[in-house]
Length: 54
Image (cartoon, rainbow, N blue to C red; front, side, top):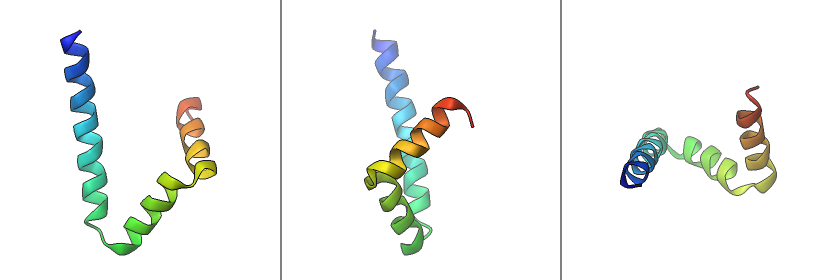
């Protein structure tokens, strides 16, 4: 069970590092990220697209 938590934490750390590097690109990228993460319709579309493998 501990290995599962460790893997989840490592995945989360990589994802957050990726978001942080995108944020370092400036205000325009932060605006795009904020819209993608807070717009329920856009977020749902992106997640469903990723899950279906398109």
